[in-house]
Length: 115
Length: 113
Image 1 (spheres, rainbow over the protein chains, first blue to last red):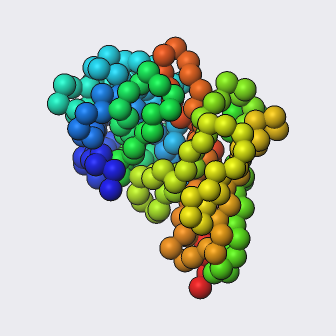
Image 2: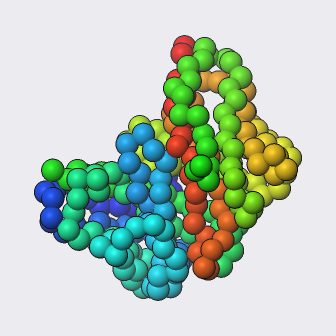
């Protein structure tokens, strides 16, 4: 177990709706990264938060947004859902974003289905 | 061309076989190399990491990095049915202060008893 938890485990939404996914990082980990994993693909980086500020972003549109809170929890929000947003959403926590040697520990993911 | 290429398989081997999993990459900025194992409907778990060329061994697992060829490998000795999973290679560089992981597609491995 990595100590990283995510909720909910599964979610079904319809196109155009908004969704909020939640992640609880390991205690003391001040960096959280979010990834999208489509079926049969590797995870793709969405963005990273370090000490409650966005620290980098992948090739995802602005309707993907996030928040990180002081209590080691974070959120991923997706507006105007599209069918292609159906995927497993993973959060990963790490101790410090300032060193590339910091290991990222993944949660079990939230499986989102958009109909 | 994708930054990280990995044959998705599937790969099926008998129990006890030696398994070889490989990835190639194109970005010279990658400095840190990892292998993750992902069981069905679970999050990836870190198996091994290395940041230099050469071999690193951990039990039945050996990670190999060849930076000159931009090629990494994971070897599994005496494979077990419990090794059946998808294996993801991942790499990290740096960009705009963010240390993001870039993953391969994953190779699905089945070890047959």
